Image 1 (tube, rainbow, N blue to C red):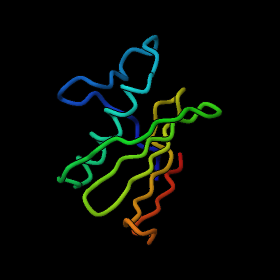
Image 2: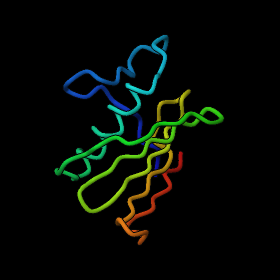
Image 3: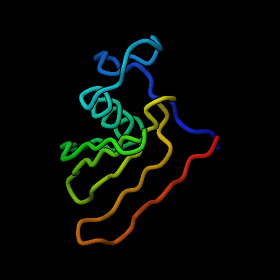
Image 4: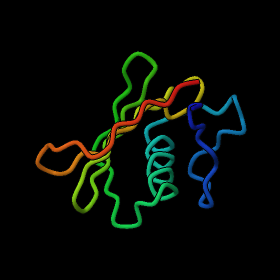
Length: 99
């Protein structure tokens, strides 16, 4: 599987078309929540935390019964990994996306 590139969502939160445009916490959070909606998480999505470490953004999004963690490469703008955990710590889904 290849990594998922962040695409411009209908609201225009993440603009991946312009390589000069620098990613920031707001754009990364918008792209992460848009991705979760595209893969079928229709309920409430509440961004809780964004961190940048070593060129990788980590976004934590709280959902009704679970929490999603997404890792996004700041240079390629690709979601390199995401995991969805039930509240209480049980792992629902862990997916590593490879190029």
